[in-house]
Length: 91
Image 1 (cartoon, rainbow, N blue to C red):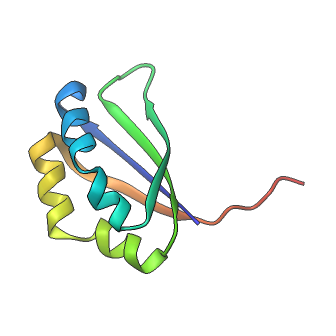
Image 2 (cartoon, rainbow, N blue to C red):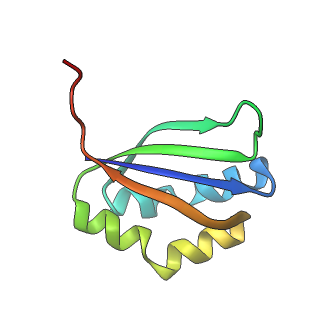
Image 3 (cartoon, rainbow, N blue to C red):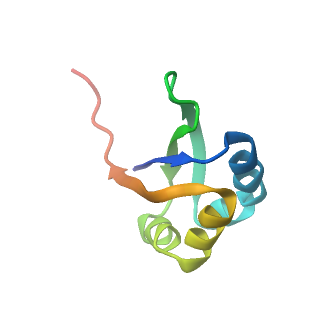
């Protein structure tokens, strides 16, 4: 399973510092970052793809007040778009 997250930030450098500081919380939730993308036309739009070890832990983390507070402190604008994805190989 994978987790796709997309949002805009006020300042990428400030957000990235806060994001990096929260690594242990993501690890405890069983999330492993695969990709961090920045929109080519808007470098303050961030898209993240994670592999998910345990869906219930990842969902609890995504819905937690601690994460929402950390995102707000780091400068995330508005609500994140969050999708849990099942991998289906191309045929």
